[in-house]
Amino acid sequence: MVGLIVFHVLMGVLGVGILSGVVPTELVTTMLGYLHNTIGISTPPEKQVRMIALVWIGSMIVIVDGCLLLLVFITSLLK
Image (spheres, rainbow, N blue to C red):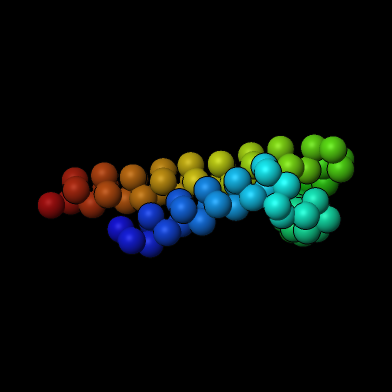
């Protein structure tokens, strides 16, 4: 439970940092470049980097929450 709260707080702080401009655009561009190259998709243009990073953060939160919800639901059925 504590890990989930820490995850959400860190993702929120990272999102606010990217949105407010505290995190440099070059760093965000580099990290998105690594992620997109690993997956095999094209990197976004410079002007869309911050919004795409926020979409990735939101997607990660939804994926983690969904997996935990399914885990709890499935294990509750096995009792």
